[in-house]
Length: 359
Image 1 (cartoon, rainbow, N blue to C red):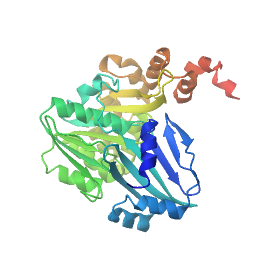
Image 2: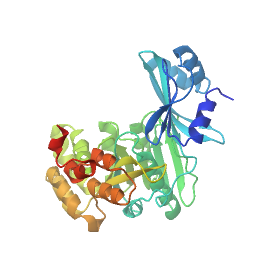
Image 3: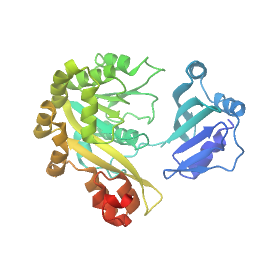
């Protein structure tokens, strides 16, 4: 058994999400969103590198030694699957292992809004799940793919770096491709996907101009495309997609994006105060005609107003969802205030009358 497996077992037993191993530091576990030290000696770079290389495929070792960074997926049979990142820092090598649940949670398990089921049943278009790192984007997308897998009879292709949740085909054919192992890049896999008769394409992350352009092309040509961006709100997601293109192309892209966008689901993850779990709050923008017109006419600053009045379409603002979680006793007033867009709305809960009280 690999030496590192003892840390994986500890992470699993304590219900943690991430294992941090860093040269010059004690091992640390992220539990309910907070890092906690493990009672273990500080790791030096040489011993940590030996521990990591024991579980690392040879091609990934070579990549890490050439570039100083590497990502891959790793399984511990009978325990869990992990998304792995190695990187170099001042004191030597470091690694982060994100634990991926062995089974895919359903949209109902995650208490996700019903509109997500409707979105993943659409025949074509673009659905984006956004939020900062660690906000549960991959978990939400996996639950959406799982719902489609059970309710549709179609071909699903996922392009990931690395593959995280492993899906067992139910009613769909599912092909999961890992960047670096099964394909050279996201854009190469996306180009190939357009010739592979897919109905649903999951792109793990829209990282660059070419990947975004190909994802838009796929959404415009009769495929349902699901993907992620590291943006913090639905309106900022629209800005990000448009601004990645050269200025002379933006008017054309804006029109195509407006036609293909079906939804932006922007997530923030909270620690629950009523049980040892975490819960996601979503801001949901649906691509109704009013939204499409604003995007087409470059009036993105008006999107928050549509969010506030579009509840009958399945839309919701982040602050409304934070308020609901707070009223149900699921999150703390401090976390509500910290993550709110309109902090004045939640200021009284933390003993403040206005933002001016921050001093």
